[in-house]
Image (cartoon, rainbow, N blue to C red; front, side, top):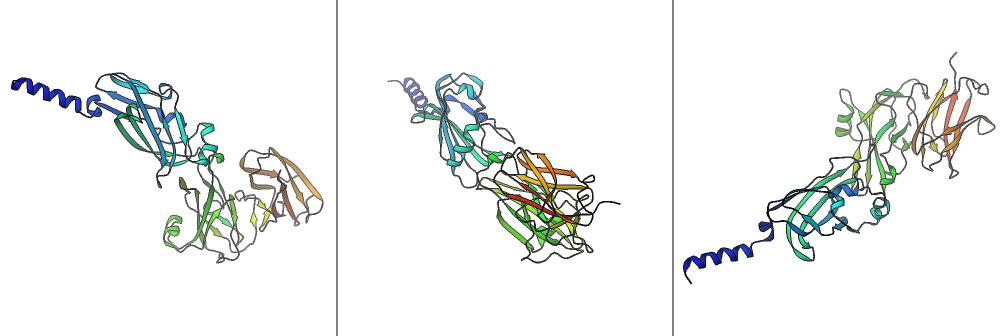
Length: 369
């Protein structure tokens, strides 16, 4: 056999033994949304560039896992996909019958049925095979980070930023991220710290020892506990809330500040933000001039509830039916024409939800003269 023929045979053997990825000259670019709520089907938006021959039996394997822990949420494998020579823009309709294997019980029950991915930070890995994953050649592989954000972020509600409160045990309330049904184990951490002269609220929370750090809060409101260091009249305080859902989601609000007034013990609701109704007997006292403002978390998902005003838990003096939406509701009641209320007297506003839970707020009625 002459040398020229031997060279050609060696070239042919090298070509036949080359890795499939080299033979195919193929690249894969998943095109994931940058933020917001994401449909599961959007994971299959993939650009494939094939500089080799057309491939008739390719499959794509996907792994969806937590970014922090690496715990797999689900895996998926497509049906055989045709990859023409050149660029191909693929979507879920090109993948045929996709087989999913859900490895997280919480996601399988809450997200998959609605077609939405769980909220949090994840890693999505794609592997492109010529054939099937069990009997094939790997052509390309890529892993990308993915952040799935709630439609509405966590926000502070009361005390309002740079406001003045007049009770040493204020009620802190916040608006949860939404939609709430996308979270399987949502809880909160509340942090309160004193603001020293010359500091911003952010600097106070970063540098000063906190007066209160309460973790594992399930409600969207909390009263400053009387067992902690008392808030001092004339001083300014910073506060912040952190929301967490298992290992996948964590969100921190911007810090707000408030000061404690020196000369009164009651908040005037006409100029305050919306203090949160408390489950059970209300621990704080407010002053109402003409309009009563309050917030209520509709945990029971009632569509309509009556807001009743009592005199010392006795006879109902005023009733107003309130149309509610799911989540936190901000409610205004105009009491200027309610003749049953006596100036200077104390009252209780109460709402009883569908679970027979009492939500209260105590106030003194002092109308403008």
